[in-house]
Length: 212
Ligand code: GRF
Image (cartoon, rainbow, N blue to C red; front, top):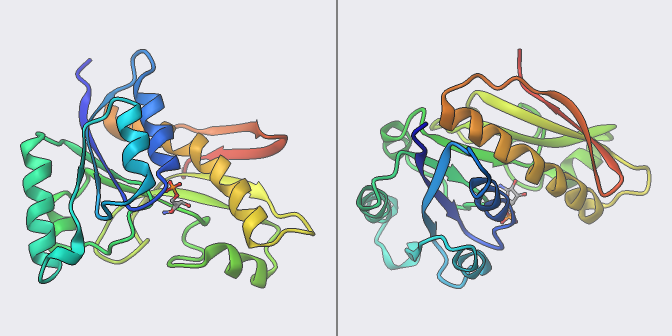
């Protein structure tokens, strides 16, 4: 089996990136991390990636005149590592339609809600305000419209009566770490994800599913 050359794009702490890098170290995993890029040079995730042996680069978006120039440099880095597949993992820059189209079908993201519910920011606050009983995260293909691409997999958790945005975010984050490697493996291997599983994360049930 050939392993897909994987780049992971981050902006911050990189906990999802760690879950992907750790999965890549397991036998038979169909992706090989060739590059971790952060648009923030100070991102904590860069040192975590280096500690796990991944090549790291920073490309500070503030040093560029606009998105097109920033993405040109990003593409240069991705191409110089012969990237085949990109996983966004807490990457906080909106990508242009032209970048997204160039990587169409090879660019995935994790979002902290059960899409199509709650696209955009502040998902946990909005889920609590809406009074939902179940919340979670989704891995999806990236399309030019933000958080609108085809869903690859979802992980659902229960909302507790005494939750606040922080406690709910922490429960969803544990679910993210379970979901993202499974979805990445499916995309990297070209197999359709078949997922219908309940697992426990720190005592909480997490229901992993893939759209039919
Ligand atoms: C995660 O909640 C992810 O879903 C969202 O940004 C957060 C990144 O966290 N896109 P981390 O950097 O992976 O810890």
